[in-house]
Length: 238
Ligand SMILES: [Zn+2]
Image (cartoon, rainbow, N blue to C red; front, top):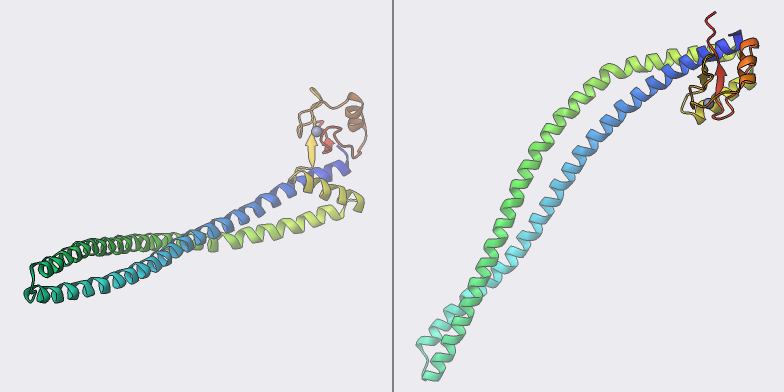
């Protein structure tokens, strides 16, 4: 391999390390973000439960007022019952009392139902709050982990970027652009090795024409794979 292809292979090695380091940093940030979102969702669900409890309590108060007025009605009708002058009047009042009592018992059932709803939502809030606490502890762990590693990864990235700059400054500007373009297109995978024996491009596993192989064996040229467009090179062992 001549000096041009050789520096491209070196550049590829740095590119790989650089992409790994950036991916590590990205992953750490994503883990942090995911955990923060998880906590946010739990907190939002607590707020929603609290809002529902407020609404249920308002329903309760409304029904409770209704219940009180029925109670008062019944008390008044009981007085009327005692002062009824005819049998007809008596039985009419009695029937109204019975209807009101039936309504009252329905209301009491509804009120009980609402109380139970509030209670179960309060229980859910307590459980969710406990979960938030656990997730916040996890967040603290994730944060301290990131604090410990982020600096090192960033130092690696800085060092690799500098090294990449050094290596690519030795290349012709046009070739530097080709490398960057291919890196962009192939997720950093620019260089592809072919073996002399089976003449297969290791980037796409397609066969490489013999004529191309021979050129690579004899000349320090930038030639790309006809199938995937990666820059081909051969390790001839010397
Ligand atoms: Zn290929």
